Length: 489
Image (cartoon, rainbow, N blue to C red; front, side, top):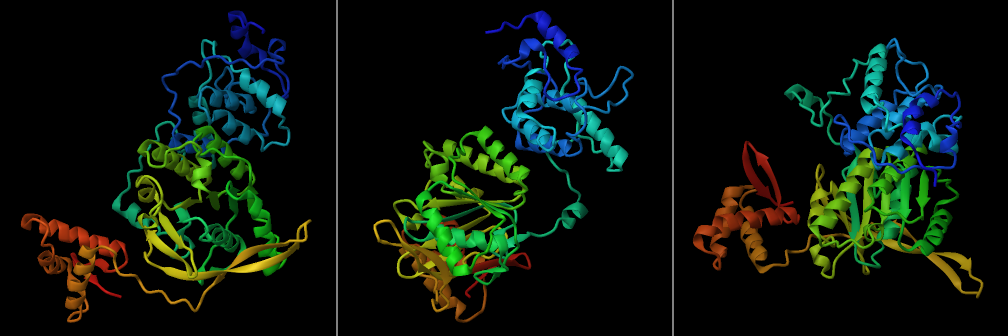
Protein backbone atom coordinates (compact mmCIF):
# COMPACT_ATOMS: atom_id res chain seq x y z
CA UNK A 1 0.00 0.00 0.00
CA UNK A 2 1.32 3.46 -0.91
CA UNK A 3 1.89 5.68 2.11
CA UNK A 4 0.54 9.24 1.78
CA UNK A 5 2.96 11.66 3.43
CA UNK A 6 2.20 15.16 4.74
CA UNK A 7 4.31 16.66 1.94
CA UNK A 8 2.16 14.84 -0.60
CA UNK A 9 -0.97 16.22 1.04
CA UNK A 10 0.42 19.77 1.07
CA UNK A 11 1.30 19.56 -2.63
CA UNK A 12 -2.03 18.14 -3.79
CA UNK A 13 -3.80 21.48 -4.27
CA UNK A 14 -1.09 22.76 -6.56
CA UNK A 15 -1.05 19.55 -8.59
CA UNK A 16 -4.51 19.84 -10.09
CA UNK A 17 -4.06 22.49 -12.83
CA UNK A 18 -4.71 19.87 -15.53
CA UNK A 19 -7.27 20.43 -18.31
CA UNK A 20 -8.85 16.98 -18.56
CA UNK A 21 -10.94 14.94 -16.17
CA UNK A 22 -8.65 11.95 -16.43
CA UNK A 23 -5.25 13.18 -15.21
CA UNK A 24 -4.15 12.81 -11.62
CA UNK A 25 -0.93 13.05 -9.60
CA UNK A 26 1.29 10.04 -10.23
CA UNK A 27 1.33 8.96 -6.60
CA UNK A 28 -2.50 8.62 -6.61
CA UNK A 29 -2.64 6.37 -9.67
CA UNK A 30 -4.42 3.11 -8.80
CA UNK A 31 -4.94 4.24 -5.25
CA UNK A 32 -8.19 5.02 -3.47
CA UNK A 33 -7.40 6.66 -0.11
CA UNK A 34 -9.83 6.28 2.76
CA UNK A 35 -8.92 9.16 5.02
CA UNK A 36 -11.08 10.58 7.77
CA UNK A 37 -12.58 13.87 6.65
CA UNK A 38 -12.09 16.94 8.86
CA UNK A 39 -15.10 18.47 10.57
CA UNK A 40 -15.54 22.04 9.32
CA UNK A 41 -17.63 24.33 11.47
CA UNK A 42 -19.63 25.48 8.43
CA UNK A 43 -20.41 21.99 7.15
CA UNK A 44 -24.20 21.52 6.99
CA UNK A 45 -25.77 18.25 8.15
CA UNK A 46 -26.88 15.62 5.63
CA UNK A 47 -30.64 16.18 5.76
CA UNK A 48 -33.25 15.97 2.96
CA UNK A 49 -33.47 19.77 3.01
CA UNK A 50 -29.70 20.23 2.64
CA UNK A 51 -29.51 17.56 -0.08
CA UNK A 52 -32.25 19.33 -2.02
CA UNK A 53 -30.48 22.66 -1.49
CA UNK A 54 -27.26 21.25 -2.98
CA UNK A 55 -29.03 19.70 -5.95
CA UNK A 56 -30.81 22.98 -6.70
CA UNK A 57 -27.48 24.80 -6.53
CA UNK A 58 -25.83 22.34 -8.93
CA UNK A 59 -28.64 23.00 -11.41
CA UNK A 60 -27.14 26.49 -11.85
CA UNK A 61 -23.62 25.16 -12.45
CA UNK A 62 -22.51 23.55 -15.71
CA UNK A 63 -20.52 20.29 -15.63
CA UNK A 64 -19.34 21.11 -19.18
CA UNK A 65 -16.92 23.81 -18.01
CA UNK A 66 -13.19 23.08 -17.93
CA UNK A 67 -11.57 21.21 -15.09
CA UNK A 68 -10.01 24.31 -13.54
CA UNK A 69 -7.50 24.51 -10.74
CA UNK A 70 -9.82 23.54 -7.92
CA UNK A 71 -11.00 27.04 -7.01
CA UNK A 72 -14.06 29.15 -7.85
CA UNK A 73 -11.97 32.36 -7.76
CA UNK A 74 -8.48 33.38 -8.93
CA UNK A 75 -5.87 35.28 -6.93
CA UNK A 76 -7.65 38.59 -7.67
CA UNK A 77 -10.95 37.11 -6.38
CA UNK A 78 -12.35 37.07 -9.92
CA UNK A 79 -14.78 34.20 -10.61
CA UNK A 80 -13.03 31.37 -12.45
CA UNK A 81 -14.46 30.34 -15.82
CA UNK A 82 -13.55 26.69 -15.24
CA UNK A 83 -14.79 25.29 -11.94
CA UNK A 84 -15.63 21.58 -12.41
CA UNK A 85 -12.91 20.36 -10.03
CA UNK A 86 -13.79 23.05 -7.48
CA UNK A 87 -17.39 21.82 -7.48
CA UNK A 88 -16.31 18.22 -6.93
CA UNK A 89 -14.02 19.18 -4.07
CA UNK A 90 -16.68 21.40 -2.46
CA UNK A 91 -19.11 18.46 -2.41
CA UNK A 92 -16.37 16.14 -1.14
CA UNK A 93 -15.76 18.53 1.77
CA UNK A 94 -19.27 17.81 3.09
CA UNK A 95 -18.31 14.23 3.96
CA UNK A 96 -21.89 13.11 3.23
CA UNK A 97 -22.69 9.48 2.46
CA UNK A 98 -24.70 10.71 -0.54
CA UNK A 99 -22.15 13.32 -1.65
CA UNK A 100 -20.27 11.18 -4.14
CA UNK A 101 -23.46 10.03 -5.86
CA UNK A 102 -24.71 13.61 -6.11
CA UNK A 103 -21.40 14.80 -7.58
CA UNK A 104 -21.27 11.88 -10.02
CA UNK A 105 -24.86 12.39 -11.18
CA UNK A 106 -24.15 16.07 -11.87
CA UNK A 107 -20.88 15.30 -13.68
CA UNK A 108 -22.50 12.63 -15.85
CA UNK A 109 -24.51 15.35 -17.59
CA UNK A 110 -21.31 16.22 -19.48
CA UNK A 111 -20.37 14.28 -22.62
CA UNK A 112 -16.74 14.36 -21.42
CA UNK A 113 -17.52 12.37 -18.26
CA UNK A 114 -15.49 9.23 -17.51
CA UNK A 115 -15.68 7.05 -14.41
CA UNK A 116 -11.90 7.00 -14.11
CA UNK A 117 -11.56 10.76 -14.33
CA UNK A 118 -14.30 11.32 -11.79
CA UNK A 119 -12.85 8.82 -9.30
CA UNK A 120 -9.41 10.42 -9.50
CA UNK A 121 -10.81 13.91 -9.05
CA UNK A 122 -13.00 12.85 -6.12
CA UNK A 123 -10.11 11.30 -4.19
CA UNK A 124 -7.67 14.10 -5.00
CA UNK A 125 -9.34 16.50 -2.56
CA UNK A 126 -6.61 17.83 -0.26
CA UNK A 127 -7.90 17.43 3.28
CA UNK A 128 -4.56 18.66 4.65
CA UNK A 129 -4.54 22.01 2.86
CA UNK A 130 -4.27 25.02 5.17
CA UNK A 131 -7.25 26.67 3.43
CA UNK A 132 -9.33 23.86 1.90
CA UNK A 133 -12.26 24.61 -0.37
CA UNK A 134 -15.68 24.11 1.28
CA UNK A 135 -19.31 24.11 0.20
CA UNK A 136 -19.62 27.79 1.15
CA UNK A 137 -17.59 28.75 -1.93
CA UNK A 138 -19.93 26.77 -4.16
CA UNK A 139 -23.03 28.40 -2.67
CA UNK A 140 -21.43 31.84 -2.94
CA UNK A 141 -20.70 31.30 -6.65
CA UNK A 142 -24.23 30.02 -7.30
CA UNK A 143 -25.75 33.06 -5.57
CA UNK A 144 -23.67 35.31 -7.86
CA UNK A 145 -24.79 33.40 -10.94
CA UNK A 146 -28.42 33.62 -9.92
CA UNK A 147 -28.12 37.32 -9.19
CA UNK A 148 -26.62 37.89 -12.65
CA UNK A 149 -29.52 35.98 -14.18
CA UNK A 150 -31.99 38.19 -12.34
CA UNK A 151 -33.23 35.42 -10.05
CA UNK A 152 -33.08 37.58 -6.98
CA UNK A 153 -29.71 36.28 -5.80
CA UNK A 154 -31.23 33.58 -3.60
CA UNK A 155 -29.17 33.54 -0.42
CA UNK A 156 -28.25 29.89 -0.21
CA UNK A 157 -25.95 30.42 2.76
CA UNK A 158 -28.57 31.88 5.08
CA UNK A 159 -31.68 30.10 3.83
CA UNK A 160 -33.13 28.14 6.73
CA UNK A 161 -35.03 24.89 6.97
CA UNK A 162 -38.36 26.58 7.64
CA UNK A 163 -40.46 28.77 5.34
CA UNK A 164 -42.13 31.67 7.14
CA UNK A 165 -45.25 32.49 5.14
CA UNK A 166 -47.49 35.51 5.39
CA UNK A 167 -51.28 34.94 5.27
CA UNK A 168 -51.29 36.16 1.66
CA UNK A 169 -48.50 33.75 0.72
CA UNK A 170 -50.35 30.89 2.38
CA UNK A 171 -53.55 31.81 0.52
CA UNK A 172 -51.62 31.76 -2.76
CA UNK A 173 -50.61 28.12 -2.31
CA UNK A 174 -52.64 26.02 -4.70
CA UNK A 175 -54.90 23.24 -3.51
CA UNK A 176 -53.94 19.58 -3.82
CA UNK A 177 -52.93 18.49 -7.31
CA UNK A 178 -54.09 14.96 -8.14
CA UNK A 179 -52.45 12.31 -10.26
CA UNK A 180 -55.65 10.24 -9.99
CA UNK A 181 -58.30 12.83 -9.21
CA UNK A 182 -59.75 12.48 -5.75
CA UNK A 183 -57.78 9.28 -5.11
CA UNK A 184 -54.00 9.80 -5.26
CA UNK A 185 -52.14 13.10 -4.87
CA UNK A 186 -49.52 14.16 -7.39
CA UNK A 187 -46.88 14.29 -4.66
CA UNK A 188 -46.64 12.42 -1.38
CA UNK A 189 -46.68 8.93 0.07
CA UNK A 190 -49.42 6.34 -0.48
CA UNK A 191 -50.05 2.64 0.11
CA UNK A 192 -52.01 -0.06 -1.67
CA UNK A 193 -52.45 -3.03 0.62
CA UNK A 194 -54.38 -6.23 1.16
CA UNK A 195 -54.03 -9.91 2.09
CA UNK A 196 -52.08 -12.35 -0.06
CA UNK A 197 -53.93 -13.41 -3.20
CA UNK A 198 -56.35 -10.46 -3.24
CA UNK A 199 -55.07 -9.19 -6.60
CA UNK A 200 -53.25 -6.11 -5.32
CA UNK A 201 -50.23 -6.57 -7.63
CA UNK A 202 -52.53 -6.86 -10.66
CA UNK A 203 -54.43 -3.78 -9.50
CA UNK A 204 -51.17 -1.90 -8.96
CA UNK A 205 -49.99 -2.75 -12.48
CA UNK A 206 -53.33 -1.60 -13.90
CA UNK A 207 -52.94 1.67 -11.98
CA UNK A 208 -49.39 2.14 -13.26
CA UNK A 209 -50.32 1.66 -16.90
CA UNK A 210 -53.21 4.11 -16.50
CA UNK A 211 -50.88 6.75 -15.06
CA UNK A 212 -48.38 6.06 -17.84
CA UNK A 213 -50.72 6.70 -20.77
CA UNK A 214 -54.49 6.57 -20.09
CA UNK A 215 -56.99 9.34 -19.38
CA UNK A 216 -58.98 7.57 -16.68
CA UNK A 217 -58.66 4.85 -14.04
CA UNK A 218 -61.97 3.43 -12.81
CA UNK A 219 -63.54 6.61 -14.29
CA UNK A 220 -61.31 8.90 -12.22
CA UNK A 221 -59.33 11.39 -14.30
CA UNK A 222 -55.60 10.67 -14.56
CA UNK A 223 -52.54 12.83 -15.22
CA UNK A 224 -49.92 11.01 -17.27
CA UNK A 225 -46.53 10.79 -15.59
CA UNK A 226 -43.46 8.53 -15.77
CA UNK A 227 -43.73 5.42 -13.59
CA UNK A 228 -40.93 3.38 -12.01
CA UNK A 229 -41.92 -0.06 -10.69
CA UNK A 230 -39.59 -1.79 -8.23
CA UNK A 231 -40.74 -5.41 -8.40
CA UNK A 232 -39.22 -7.29 -5.49
CA UNK A 233 -41.96 -9.85 -4.90
CA UNK A 234 -43.26 -12.37 -7.43
CA UNK A 235 -40.61 -11.48 -10.02
CA UNK A 236 -41.33 -14.62 -12.04
CA UNK A 237 -44.94 -13.59 -12.60
CA UNK A 238 -44.10 -10.08 -13.72
CA UNK A 239 -43.24 -11.07 -17.30
CA UNK A 240 -46.53 -12.92 -17.83
CA UNK A 241 -48.46 -10.08 -16.17
CA UNK A 242 -47.02 -7.64 -18.70
CA UNK A 243 -47.66 -10.04 -21.58
CA UNK A 244 -51.29 -10.48 -20.51
CA UNK A 245 -51.83 -6.74 -20.27
CA UNK A 246 -50.32 -6.14 -23.72
CA UNK A 247 -52.39 -8.92 -25.27
CA UNK A 248 -55.55 -7.38 -23.84
CA UNK A 249 -54.66 -3.74 -24.58
CA UNK A 250 -52.69 -4.00 -27.80
CA UNK A 251 -49.05 -3.26 -28.45
CA UNK A 252 -48.80 -0.11 -26.34
CA UNK A 253 -45.08 0.74 -25.99
CA UNK A 254 -45.33 1.89 -22.33
CA UNK A 255 -42.20 3.97 -22.93
CA UNK A 256 -42.59 5.86 -19.66
CA UNK A 257 -42.87 2.74 -17.52
CA UNK A 258 -39.53 1.44 -16.25
CA UNK A 259 -39.13 -1.73 -14.21
CA UNK A 260 -36.43 -2.51 -11.65
CA UNK A 261 -35.97 -6.11 -10.56
CA UNK A 262 -32.61 -5.60 -8.84
CA UNK A 263 -32.57 -5.89 -5.07
CA UNK A 264 -33.25 -2.58 -3.34
CA UNK A 265 -32.69 -1.88 0.35
CA UNK A 266 -34.88 0.91 1.67
CA UNK A 267 -33.08 0.77 5.02
CA UNK A 268 -29.85 2.09 3.47
CA UNK A 269 -29.91 5.85 2.98
CA UNK A 270 -27.14 5.78 0.41
CA UNK A 271 -29.07 3.30 -1.71
CA UNK A 272 -32.18 5.49 -1.55
CA UNK A 273 -30.19 8.51 -2.72
CA UNK A 274 -28.53 6.47 -5.49
CA UNK A 275 -31.93 5.27 -6.72
CA UNK A 276 -33.31 8.82 -6.70
CA UNK A 277 -30.30 10.15 -8.60
CA UNK A 278 -30.63 7.46 -11.27
CA UNK A 279 -34.37 8.05 -11.64
CA UNK A 280 -33.79 11.79 -12.07
CA UNK A 281 -30.85 11.24 -14.44
CA UNK A 282 -33.06 9.14 -16.72
CA UNK A 283 -35.83 11.78 -16.71
CA UNK A 284 -38.20 9.58 -14.70
CA UNK A 285 -38.59 12.01 -11.81
CA UNK A 286 -41.71 14.03 -11.01
CA UNK A 287 -43.72 10.85 -11.50
CA UNK A 288 -44.70 7.75 -9.56
CA UNK A 289 -42.49 5.14 -7.88
CA UNK A 290 -44.14 1.86 -6.85
CA UNK A 291 -42.31 -0.38 -4.37
CA UNK A 292 -43.64 -3.97 -4.37
CA UNK A 293 -43.46 -4.77 -1.46
CA UNK A 294 -42.44 -2.80 1.64
CA UNK A 295 -41.46 -6.05 3.35
CA UNK A 296 -39.11 -7.10 0.53
CA UNK A 297 -37.59 -3.61 0.35
CA UNK A 298 -36.68 -3.60 4.06
CA UNK A 299 -35.22 -7.06 4.80
CA UNK A 300 -34.72 -7.76 8.47
CA UNK A 301 -36.90 -4.87 9.63
CA UNK A 302 -39.31 -5.40 12.49
CA UNK A 303 -42.49 -3.85 11.07
CA UNK A 304 -43.98 -3.59 14.55
CA UNK A 305 -41.01 -1.61 15.85
CA UNK A 306 -41.49 2.15 15.96
CA UNK A 307 -37.74 2.59 15.37
CA UNK A 308 -37.57 0.37 12.27
CA UNK A 309 -40.80 1.71 10.81
CA UNK A 310 -39.75 5.31 11.44
CA UNK A 311 -36.52 4.64 9.57
CA UNK A 312 -38.45 3.17 6.63
CA UNK A 313 -40.85 6.11 6.59
CA UNK A 314 -37.99 8.63 6.69
CA UNK A 315 -36.33 6.98 3.69
CA UNK A 316 -39.61 6.74 1.77
CA UNK A 317 -40.11 10.46 2.33
CA UNK A 318 -36.52 11.14 1.29
CA UNK A 319 -37.07 9.22 -1.96
CA UNK A 320 -40.27 11.20 -2.55
CA UNK A 321 -38.58 14.54 -1.88
CA UNK A 322 -35.57 13.81 -4.09
CA UNK A 323 -37.73 12.67 -7.03
CA UNK A 324 -40.51 15.22 -6.43
CA UNK A 325 -43.38 12.84 -7.09
CA UNK A 326 -45.55 10.16 -5.51
CA UNK A 327 -44.19 7.02 -3.83
CA UNK A 328 -46.62 4.09 -3.51
CA UNK A 329 -45.81 1.07 -1.37
CA UNK A 330 -47.50 -2.29 -1.85
CA UNK A 331 -48.05 -3.81 1.57
CA UNK A 332 -49.81 -6.66 3.37
CA UNK A 333 -52.44 -6.89 6.07
CA UNK A 334 -51.60 -8.57 9.34
CA UNK A 335 -53.02 -11.81 10.71
CA UNK A 336 -56.19 -9.90 11.50
CA UNK A 337 -57.11 -8.26 8.18
CA UNK A 338 -59.65 -6.05 9.94
CA UNK A 339 -56.80 -4.18 11.63
CA UNK A 340 -55.61 -2.85 8.27
CA UNK A 341 -51.99 -2.22 7.34
CA UNK A 342 -49.51 -4.61 8.88
CA UNK A 343 -46.98 -3.12 11.27
CA UNK A 344 -46.58 -0.06 13.44
CA UNK A 345 -49.36 2.55 13.38
CA UNK A 346 -46.90 5.30 12.42
CA UNK A 347 -47.02 4.04 8.83
CA UNK A 348 -50.70 4.82 8.35
CA UNK A 349 -50.25 8.21 9.99
CA UNK A 350 -47.50 9.09 7.49
CA UNK A 351 -49.59 8.28 4.41
CA UNK A 352 -51.31 10.86 2.25
CA UNK A 353 -53.56 8.18 0.75
CA UNK A 354 -54.27 4.56 1.57
CA UNK A 355 -56.09 2.03 -0.65
CA UNK A 356 -57.32 -1.25 0.81
CA UNK A 357 -57.81 -4.21 -1.56
CA UNK A 358 -60.13 -7.09 -0.65
CA UNK A 359 -60.15 -10.46 -2.41
CA UNK A 360 -62.62 -13.32 -2.67
CA UNK A 361 -65.44 -13.58 -5.18
CA UNK A 362 -66.19 -9.87 -4.97
CA UNK A 363 -62.86 -8.10 -5.27
CA UNK A 364 -62.79 -4.41 -4.55
CA UNK A 365 -60.61 -1.50 -3.58
CA UNK A 366 -61.50 1.08 -0.95
CA UNK A 367 -59.98 4.53 -0.47
CA UNK A 368 -59.54 4.07 3.25
CA UNK A 369 -57.71 7.35 3.78
CA UNK A 370 -57.20 10.52 1.75
CA UNK A 371 -55.78 13.57 3.50
CA UNK A 372 -57.27 15.99 0.97
CA UNK A 373 -60.01 13.89 -0.60
CA UNK A 374 -63.10 11.98 0.44
CA UNK A 375 -62.56 8.72 2.30
CA UNK A 376 -64.73 5.71 1.55
CA UNK A 377 -64.70 5.69 -2.26
CA UNK A 378 -65.05 2.04 -3.29
CA UNK A 379 -64.95 0.23 -6.65
CA UNK A 380 -65.30 -3.41 -7.62
CA UNK A 381 -63.09 -5.28 -10.05
CA UNK A 382 -62.56 -8.74 -11.47
CA UNK A 383 -59.46 -10.55 -12.71
CA UNK A 384 -59.90 -11.68 -16.29
CA UNK A 385 -57.80 -14.74 -17.18
CA UNK A 386 -55.65 -14.28 -20.30
CA UNK A 387 -54.22 -17.31 -22.13
CA UNK A 388 -50.66 -16.76 -23.29
CA UNK A 389 -49.76 -20.10 -24.89
CA UNK A 390 -48.07 -23.30 -23.78
CA UNK A 391 -44.87 -23.95 -21.89
CA UNK A 392 -42.21 -26.53 -22.81
CA UNK A 393 -44.28 -29.31 -21.20
CA UNK A 394 -47.42 -28.37 -23.09
CA UNK A 395 -49.12 -26.81 -20.06
CA UNK A 396 -51.09 -23.63 -20.55
CA UNK A 397 -49.53 -20.32 -19.51
CA UNK A 398 -52.00 -17.80 -18.12
CA UNK A 399 -52.09 -14.52 -16.29
CA UNK A 400 -54.73 -11.91 -15.45
CA UNK A 401 -55.78 -8.35 -16.18
CA UNK A 402 -58.03 -6.08 -14.15
CA UNK A 403 -61.55 -5.24 -15.31
CA UNK A 404 -63.90 -2.90 -13.50
CA UNK A 405 -66.99 -4.65 -12.15
CA UNK A 406 -69.79 -2.21 -12.95
CA UNK A 407 -72.46 -4.57 -11.59
CA UNK A 408 -71.03 -4.79 -8.11
CA UNK A 409 -72.93 -2.47 -5.79
CA UNK A 410 -71.30 -1.73 -2.47
CA UNK A 411 -72.97 -0.89 0.80
CA UNK A 412 -70.95 0.19 3.79
CA UNK A 413 -70.96 -2.68 6.31
CA UNK A 414 -72.20 -2.01 9.79
CA UNK A 415 -69.52 -1.38 12.42
CA UNK A 416 -68.32 -4.59 14.02
CA UNK A 417 -68.30 -3.51 17.69
CA UNK A 418 -71.47 -3.61 19.81
CA UNK A 419 -70.80 -0.15 21.28
CA UNK A 420 -70.43 1.46 17.83
CA UNK A 421 -73.49 -0.42 16.54
CA UNK A 422 -75.65 0.87 19.40
CA UNK A 423 -74.31 4.41 18.99
CA UNK A 424 -74.93 4.43 15.23
CA UNK A 425 -78.43 3.04 15.70
CA UNK A 426 -79.28 5.82 18.16
CA UNK A 427 -77.91 8.52 15.83
CA UNK A 428 -79.82 7.09 12.84
CA UNK A 429 -83.07 7.31 14.82
CA UNK A 430 -82.44 11.01 15.44
CA UNK A 431 -81.42 11.65 11.81
CA UNK A 432 -84.80 10.38 10.63
CA UNK A 433 -86.19 13.64 11.99
CA UNK A 434 -83.48 16.01 10.74
CA UNK A 435 -80.92 15.93 7.89
CA UNK A 436 -78.06 16.87 10.23
CA UNK A 437 -77.40 17.07 13.95
CA UNK A 438 -74.64 18.76 15.90
CA UNK A 439 -71.75 16.75 17.29
CA UNK A 440 -72.73 17.86 20.78
CA UNK A 441 -76.27 16.63 20.11
CA UNK A 442 -74.89 13.30 18.92
CA UNK A 443 -72.81 13.03 22.10
CA UNK A 444 -75.93 13.54 24.21
CA UNK A 445 -77.68 10.80 22.20
CA UNK A 446 -74.83 8.31 22.65
CA UNK A 447 -74.06 8.86 26.34
CA UNK A 448 -77.11 6.92 27.65
CA UNK A 449 -75.99 3.86 25.64
CA UNK A 450 -72.61 3.76 27.43
CA UNK A 451 -73.83 1.99 30.54
CA UNK A 452 -70.48 0.29 31.17
CA UNK A 453 -68.60 3.62 31.16
CA UNK A 454 -68.30 5.84 34.24
CA UNK A 455 -70.71 8.80 33.99
CA UNK A 456 -67.93 11.42 34.13
CA UNK A 457 -66.14 9.71 31.20
CA UNK A 458 -69.10 9.19 28.89
CA UNK A 459 -68.79 12.53 27.09
CA UNK A 460 -65.21 11.91 25.95
CA UNK A 461 -66.02 8.29 25.12
CA UNK A 462 -69.01 9.36 23.01
CA UNK A 463 -66.88 11.90 21.16
CA UNK A 464 -64.29 9.21 20.35
CA UNK A 465 -67.03 6.88 19.09
CA UNK A 466 -68.37 9.59 16.76
CA UNK A 467 -64.88 10.16 15.37
CA UNK A 468 -64.50 6.42 14.83
CA UNK A 469 -67.82 6.26 12.97
CA UNK A 470 -66.70 9.16 10.75
CA UNK A 471 -63.29 7.58 10.09
CA UNK A 472 -64.99 4.30 9.22
CA UNK A 473 -67.28 5.99 6.71
CA UNK A 474 -70.46 5.26 8.67
CA UNK A 475 -71.10 8.95 9.34
CA UNK A 476 -70.18 12.17 7.57
CA UNK A 477 -68.80 15.03 9.62
CA UNK A 478 -67.87 18.66 8.98
CA UNK A 479 -67.75 22.15 10.46
CA UNK A 480 -70.67 24.44 9.69
CA UNK A 481 -70.73 27.93 11.18
CA UNK A 482 -67.96 26.90 13.58
CA UNK A 483 -70.03 23.97 14.86
CA UNK A 484 -69.37 20.31 14.21
CA UNK A 485 -72.25 18.48 12.53
CA UNK A 486 -72.83 14.88 11.42
CA UNK A 487 -75.15 13.33 8.85
CA UNK A 488 -75.75 10.17 6.82
CA UNK A 489 -75.26 9.73 3.07
